[in-house]
Structures are given as structure tokens and as C-alpha cells.
Image (tube, rainbow, N blue to C red):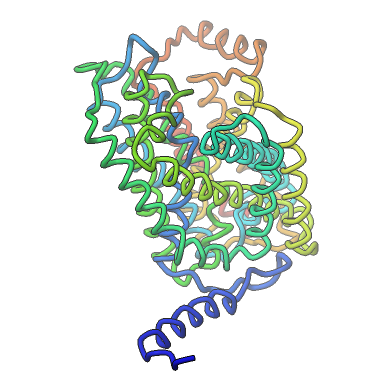
Length: 462
């Protein structure tokens, strides 16, 4: 056999060194009270959040931005709502990411500083339910996407099992998985997105709601909510950041660019499929070699299920700090897979339930941020297992949740919607286009927390 040329040898060595670097990367701590390795740079955060900003769900839910048939926003209004809503929501995400980078603690463990250890269990349990629910939904989405690419309605169970196994493997080695996303996946996703953008753009994009801006703030509010949904997960990853600055700007820039791109591409595909979200992927498959690039996006979707399953494990560690995260990740990955095998589709009631839980975290972030930067957090939060309860901090959080539901009641049950509708009638309040549930549910508890700052500082110093 002839000797390898210097160029081929150096190429092989480079590939080998790259793989070795990924394998030798320090991993996340096994238990909660271990100092996390600080290995993630700006490019790691950017790649992670860029991948999380692209979602098969995002493509199809672009219909919520466009509006109901017959009253669609203009294309200019829809795109503007996507850009502004994403930027505002991702700025909130960046704040949560920044706090995680400063404290070095997972997201739910940071709430020990805000509420005290025992009171932090309440939002922790809510986040566990939310993350498991979305983890199941992601496995179902991956399975449906794989069936679409394969042009089959069968083998759903096989695709769920494969997606569940890959998801669980990623959660066992989270920092190594982030390195793989940066080195190998982010580029492939970018190529697929560019390809679909060019191909769909060449076909032209109709504008069914030309000139219509009615419903613009509602669409903006929906985009804020999508971005904020990652707030209770952010610190689970940015706790490994080398600097708070790289955590903030990496998450903000990566997620903003990706989500704007994802939803605008979703609008293009939606408008070329006669506005039917159930046929949106037909637009992707209708271009030459579309199945190949759609397959890239389907495989990439496992980073969404990875984030939900891993953050569930991190949340459980706030309750059981001495349990090995690998055991938790494996068990939660298996549970999520089993649930996905048992559920054919999510009902509207369950969507409403997840939305109800999601409305918890907009006001929670407001209280978290104000208390950390202006309140007790300025002197350093107590994140230990015996952090004392701070009952006062529940008040602005509950107030923000009530504001959110008062403006936009979640359709989780008739009695729940009727209660908030009756409250609107009693106070002679009619929601207007400018009454953004997300923004008001952030501003009101933020101001309330700021007003309580003198009391909270004294209580926190005892």
C-alpha cells in the first residue's frame, strides 16, 4: 500500500483531533452541588440556540402569526411581528441565560435564591410537567416528520423509539452534545435553511392580507411567548459559560436569527400551500431534493427533545440534588418515549394546559430579574439546600400570572375561561389590540418587585 500523502495525513489527523476534542471535553456535574466546568464560549452558545431556534413546530405554527383565514395580516406586518416579538422575547431569554452564567446554577436551583429552597419546588414541579409534555410532543413531531419524508403512515412506533433513544443518548453527555451541534449540525441546518429559502423564494410569495395590520400586536405577543418558553431552561446550559457576556449574546443572537428565519420560511411555505398548516411540508417536498434537506431538519429536531429531557433532569435535581443526573436523564428519556408511544396526538385541552403553565414563566422571569439585579441578588443569593423561604416574592409572581390570565385567559377548561371572562366584565375591561398579555404580565410584576425591593432586601439579609 502506498504511503499516505502529507495532505491526506494532516486531514486525517485534523479529523481525529476534532473527534478527540469532543470526547475529552469535561462533562456536566453528576450531582447538583458540584461546581460546573466553564467550557462554553460564544460560538457554543450561538450554535446551541441557533439549533433550538429552528423547529418543525415553528414552521407549522407560523399560521398563528398570519392570522385566521379571511383576516390575515399583510406579509410586511407578519414579518415585522416575527422580528419584534422574537427580539423582545429573546432579550428576556438572554437575561435568564446571563443569570445562569453568573451563578453557575441550573435554572430551577436559581429559584432557591428568589423564593428559598422549599418554595422553589412549586415552579420546579410546574417546569417538570411542562418539559415532559413538550418532550413528548417533540418525539411525536419527529416521528410525523420522518413519516412525511418516507412517504408512509406506518412505522410510527419505530421512529418514536429511534428518536427517543437518540434523545436520551444526547442527555447523558450534554456538553459533548453541544460540541457536536456546533461542529457538525449547525452548518448542515444552515445549508438546508438557505436551500429552502432560495427555492421557495424563486416561486414567489403571495400576500393575502395586503395592507392589513389589525392583529399585529397579538401576533407579536405570540412570538414573545414562543421565545420566553425557553426561559426556564436557559441557565441549565449557560451555567457552563466562560463569561456572562458570551452567554447573553450567544443565546440572544443565535436564537433571534434562527427563530426569525424559521418563522419567515414557515410563512413562505404556508402561503404556497394555500394557508393550510397541515400541508406546509408539501411545499418543502415540492422542490427538487426537498426530501433530503427536510430530513436534515427532522434529524435536527432531536435537539429540541434533548433540551426538554435534559432540563427535566436538571429540574428534578433541584428536588433530589444527590441523584446522578445520568440516572435521571435515562429514566426521563425512557418515560418520555413510552408516553409518546401511548399518545397519538395532543388534545386542545392539553395544549391549553401547557399554555397555562407557560404563562407562569413570563411574570416569574420579571420577578427573577428585578430581584437579582436590584434586590437581594445584588449581595448574592443563597442557593444552598437550606435557603430560607421568601414568601414576599410570591406576591408579584402571582400578580403577574393574574394579569396574564385577565388579559388573555388560557383555554384550558370552560370554568377557567368563564372565571376570567366574568372578571373582565365585572371591571368593564375589553382586551384591545395594544393589550399584550406577555408584556403587561412582565411589566406589572417587575414594577411590583421593584416596589418591594426595600422589604425583600431586609428579609433576605436575616
